[in-house]
Image 1 (cartoon, rainbow, N blue to C red):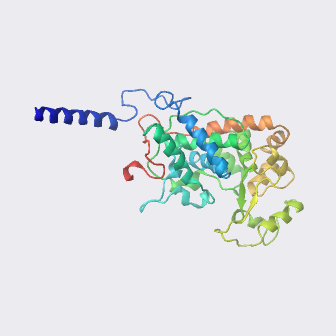
Image 2: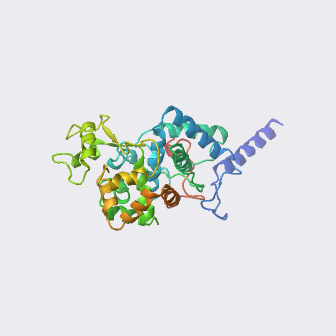
Length: 333
């Protein structure tokens, strides 16, 4: 009798293991790709939990909303929306978070806070890639921006893409031609790029990124009224990158995602070279002027561009994995 019980237990254990280790989609199952409300059956509360966590974190730490917005650019803009940005460095690979392009990114620990809340409800179901994208969507709302319906169903990558970050992600001071080209490769057209750069309406720019426009000589195109404030905030020609020295992107409404950014850059108050070029290049200036006049138009193009960015080459079906924690691939967990 005892041996029969052991045999039954062993068979049950094998059956459980076979189910738990099976990919989300077997080879003969159809991969639905990204869809609206992907978790409606497997974890119906997922999006509500993420939304509530974003709200709670925003109440405690206002700058988390800026971080969520930056994350979607820095993750989805580099080959794939696969949460590779969130992976820590290992002995063999450098994390994307530690590259020069990622300077100033922070609050990654709070992504883990959101992940833990989701895991308590539905362990092993919701990807970090979807949490990254949905936290950006809800962070945009926290900043007064539009609610953007976004598809889900992404899975998590297993490796960092640090080696190719600079090939895909334009720097703040790249030429506008490079910026347009990089986003065009993701299917985002010129008005979409102009709208995405409207994210510079919120947050701040570290002095490290803009002192070359102030020293040794002030860039002639800068508005003299704004230069005084920039010099006050960035008094050192070679600022300490570890020091908290920065200029608010929009002094008027620094915590609100709005079209004030476009009025500022038309008035030569853009902090970065790309801001100035956006307002002066013949390909982008007409859209800058249109967005400066109409916040509705800005929000419409911004929403469309964020949706396209969020769908850039995702891992779906049986590709990738669902990480147990967002900063470590499962094989290293």
